[in-house]
Length: 163
Length: 99
Image (cartoon, rainbow over all chains, first blue to last red; front, top):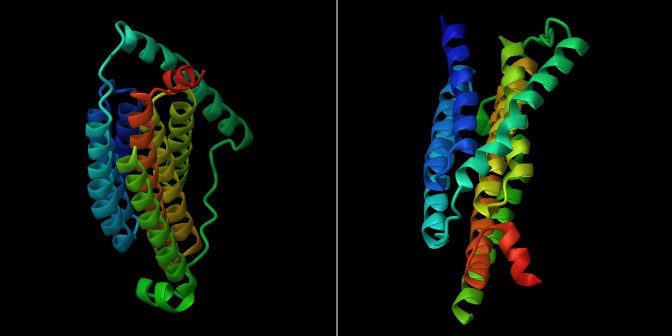
């Protein structure tokens, strides 16, 4: 039963990501992206990664959507070209062909898709232990990246107000 | 079960890359990058499940999410600046203005 739910969710994930790239309205595309994040959260939870799932839900489905929405509201393109939507959808006619070719190549090179080389669980640490003791350099890196991002945004806003 | 997850990852990569190549809107380029990142997140969780080291996978996913958001915030700032200068987020129009 659990596997069936996972299959349905994986199908929904692909469908909603297709919806995200093909929808005309950018704001609706961003909402579809939030839906992708929400579905990925449930998948991660089912696969046994609850902490990362919570991060995905709060940051990717929440904060990222807010950033995108504010960017779209600040950069509203005033002149939509007539017949733009048909041209836009015309770009995606090759997508099913590429998907079919890639899946065909995968099935030819790996018939039956037997990637299942499951190694039995080694020592299962807690996430807290891994994050704070084994990979504490990552935390330092994250702090540096966040500071770089903050300073970058501050400098960009300064430039804008000068202009 | 794992093969289906692998196929989903491949499909997410294809959709993300295709959108990245075909779109000319800077915001949609960011959306394509986000979809690619979703694929990478799924790869990391899948790898954690296969190797039995889910805690390491989770910590890497958390790092990935933080880096993703910072990149997105800076890129959004750059896009807003580009829009203020060129009055458009369409790559063709921006290059036309430059010429």
